[in-house]
Image 1 (cartoon, rainbow, N blue to C red):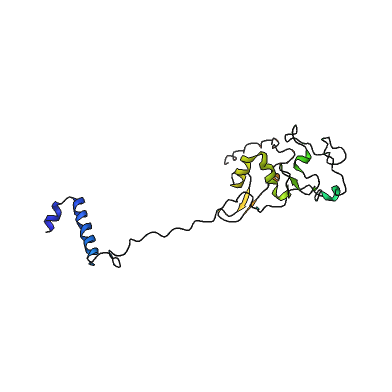
Image 2 (cartoon, rainbow, N blue to C red):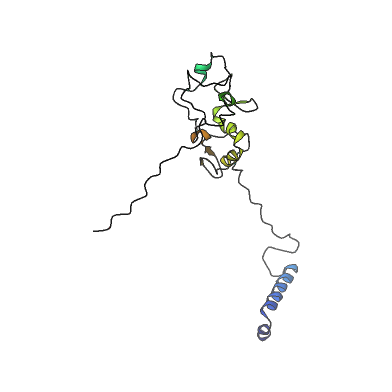
Length: 197
């Protein structure tokens, strides 16, 4: 019998062995222990997917406090008793150090700051939001940057890849009144080490 097996091609011998094993299983004979023709084949358990790592639009995000200049917030400390003046003008009494280079042909202070509640920012819809959600204000015009910021491609965030994260606000890197980065003088190239003596 050993000689007959040697004369079969390898593929045919494998098919015969597989057929014999299957026949043994159906007859309750030898085969894999614990399986029978009446049992359905084992299926893989579904793998639990990790929780979504990206925030849903409108979800509150953990951010550090906005980078206010010292002594300037809350704005209501000074503005509480002031009548809002919506007239576009150069500021000469206060905030004269702020120079707007951010679509200044079309924008002015009260397009982004709440006129009646200076401790809030104002969306284009008129909705007031806290400074901690200023990314919503920026995202109205810079939607692609907001999308990239949410998924971690733009800006900085720390935390866990599949868990809690902390996001830096746009204003942590960009001056909201002049958001373009200023040119940085390049550092000199590294010097090669001194040759051994």
